Length: 247
Ligand SMILES: Nc1ncnc2c1ncn2[C@@H]1O[C@H](COP(=O)(O)OP(=O)(O)OP(=O)(O)O)[C@@H](O)[C@H]1O
Ligand SMILES: [Mg+2]
Image (tube, rainbow, N blue to C red; front, side):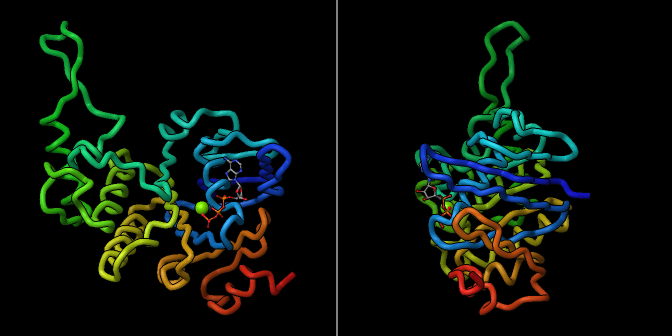
C-alpha cells in the first residue's frame, strides 16, 4: 500500500502555473528519485506534500488519510519530514540543539514553575541519535556553523529522523558535498530504507539517484514526464526525459 498518494496536484503562483496535475505514489521503504531541470517544480511539489504550499486542485493522501487541507505541523505529526535545500539549521547553536530545534523537550520544576528546555535530555538523546545513525561529528556541543557541509547535512538528516517519520523528503542533500560526505549521506538513505521509511530524493546528480533509488520520477515544466524503475532505464534515457527529447 502507498504511504503517499498525490493525485492531480495543481499549483500556481499568481498567473504562473508551476504544477499541472501531478500524480505520484510512494510506498513504505521505497526510495524514489525526483529529477528535472532547474525550475521544473520539484521543490514546489515537495512543499505541497509538507503543506508549506496549499494546492489549487488535487489531493494529498498520506498514510491513508486525506491531508490536503492539513497544516504543516499536523502533517509533520503524521510522519512527514522534509530536509530543505538550504538546510535551515541554526549555525550558532550547537549540534544537539539543532537536532531538537523547534521541538525541544521541556520539563517543569516541581510541576509548578513555567516549563523550560531540558538541555541535558537534548544532549543525551542527540548523542544517542547520532550514534544510532553512525554519524561522526567532533562534538555535540560545538556550533553547527563550524561543521563541514557534509556534517551539517547529516545533522539535518538526524534531526528529521529523531521524530520517527514515515516519509522523508530530501531536497538536494548531496549538491555541495565532497565525495566521502556524499557516501555518508547515501549510507543514511540505505539505513532509512531498511527501517521502512519512504524517501523522496531530489538531486541533479544522477549517479546518486541511480545508486540510491529504486524508482525515478522525472518532472518537466510541472508535469510528470516519466515514472520508471531504475532497472528498466539508464542514465542517458533519464537525461533525455529531463531535457525533453521525449517531447
Ligand atoms: N514562492 C514562489 N513564488 C513564485 N514563483 C515561485 C515560487 N516558488 C517557486 N516558484 C517558481 O516555480 C517554478 C518551479 O520552481 P521550483 O523551485 O519548484 O523548481 P525546482 O525544480 O525545485 O528547481 P531547482 O532544481 O533549481 O531547485 C520556478 O519557475 C519558480 O520561479
Ligand atoms: Mg528546487
